[in-house]
Image (tube, rainbow, N blue to C red; front, side):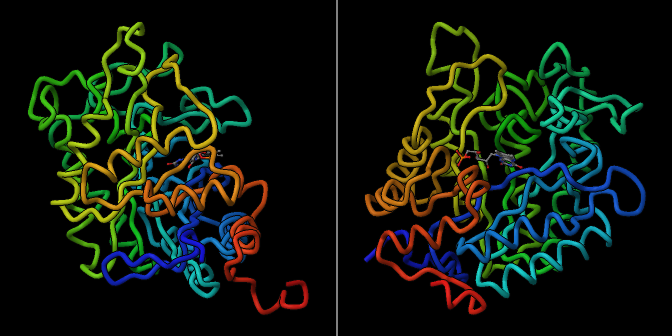
Length: 365
Ligand SMILES: Cc1cc2nc3c(=O)[nH]c(=O)nc-3n(C[C@H](O)[C@H](O)[C@H](O)COP(=O)(O)O)c2cc1C
């Protein structure tokens, strides 16, 4: 018996296995015109291939809730009808092929308005479809980035409402899981971390104040997401500053993640997608196979919130051990699934479990 290929039920949704596709930006949407931010053939093929490959859940890339919340001008968005229609086609295909469709709702904050990564990811201005980013405080991500405009209290409420509106559209498009992107140095994380949040109002300072935006966004998404369907939260469990005391900078810590996880549970979050990093340039990250699993395992051990582990999980037996040992309820696979869309079905074969090959391919199985 393989633990990795056991179904997982969250609320009333049964996810057929515990090998899921992690959210990965493709920077491949039209940057202007009526199809700006609309998922097209590339996105359908890219996400659809991973459903055909046997992933239990397929998470969209970071999907911006407002135009200025895009990381790059070529990001996907979910603030208008055309985008919703594009996503409906994808969600339908994923479900037809047995995968649960998940949408990652995101706002890039001060890390917005950058070029696509394969051209270096440098900040872009209005001459290259860019814009002025916003953030909790007027502190740029790097010296090369624009200084973000500090969000007013009214604008913060606008951001919260945009998450709710995008969640409503995601539901109408057929998604079954909504994930709030609270990680990797993007807007929600920028509020969580004292490294990027220097506000002195109700959204900065104490743990309660720094987590306020995250909880307001979760509440707003939860309010429109049906009671029988799960909401995930992706967190950067640490900024990798407290782990390196010689760094001297202060950031979000693993202790705070455990504390937040307990609060998220009371706000109706069903799973913590546990990543790390992304807020502080130059933070020393101890990478290696499964390097983020201990952070997920700690939340799992110290709270009642289900967790998913991610990061350098590339081997079927490694993935099986993470779930079978109870360190995480599921694993998310990123780059290995880019290299090999059929990884889940291959893992099933290696672990003696039943994969999910499409009927059309039965002569190859
Ligand atoms: C091309 C690419 C794009 C990514 N885009 C996102 C994203 O949109 N949202 C997100 O939360 N993480 C994003 N990530 C991070 C992945 O979801 C994952 O957490 C990370 O790659 C570590 O997992 P891996 O070692 O299996 O690749 C991206 C990673 C890659 C390689």
